[in-house]
Length: 69
Image 1 (tube, rainbow, N blue to C red):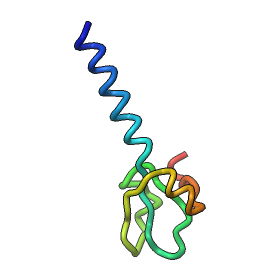
Image 2: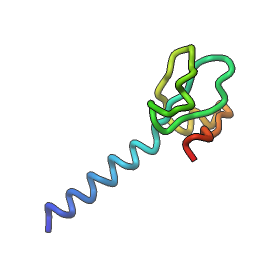
Image 3: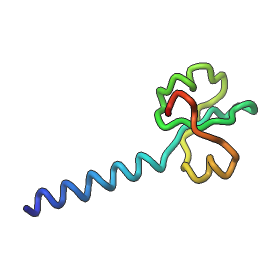
């Protein structure tokens, strides 16, 4: 039972952390954020792809990529 509880807590923690991290194209035209670093929307990024917090991306006015929906 303790093992099951520990697994549930760890799974929630990892899932919560993953949902808090997004990827952006650092170019001047980038207006979207991406949930996965291999998102198709990032394939045309000619600048650096940067990992950042979701809240920070939203503060910059970025919205979720259409390929992620």
